[in-house]
Figure 1 (cartoon, helix red, strand yellow):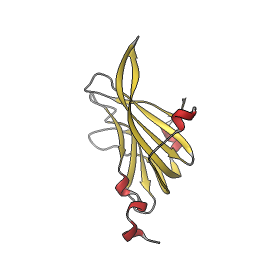
Figure 2 (cartoon, rainbow, N blue to C red):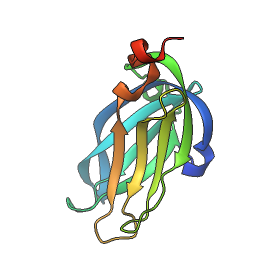
Figure 3 (cartoon, helix red, strand yellow):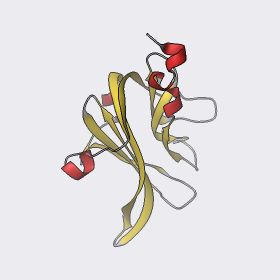
Amino acid sequence: MKTVELDSLVGEHVLDAVDGYVTKVCMYGDSFEDATAIKFRLDGIVYIAIENPSDGYRSSMKELGVATNAKDRKVTNEFPGCKVVVKKKGNDSYAQNDTLEFIDAVTGKVVLEVGTDNCDDYYPYFVSNFTPENLAVNQPSKYEG
């Protein structure tokens, strides 16, 4: 998997597939732990965000990368392509965030988030939220064209 920076995905794209799953990550030596992962296809390219589970209380995004082999490029939860605007999530008075928000261009709602929230605190946490009900394609009565 080729690692990419979050900022490289900022802008307008087409999102058409998302899968969440659990994988094993090497923590120390030969020690492996379960970690959350999320795959998404943006403009025909499959990206994978993987959690660093840390110690059970804290977590963060271990890496975001481009899937390079056929197995990793397979995404089963496909849907009609939706235009999304990808932006960095803002910080608030309580937390700094290193997270991307994928906002449906029609509904204006967040459909996908990946990254690390609360990254400047003792308890950061991995973010991998997919909210398909916010996609315009899932709201035909309101957004019919």
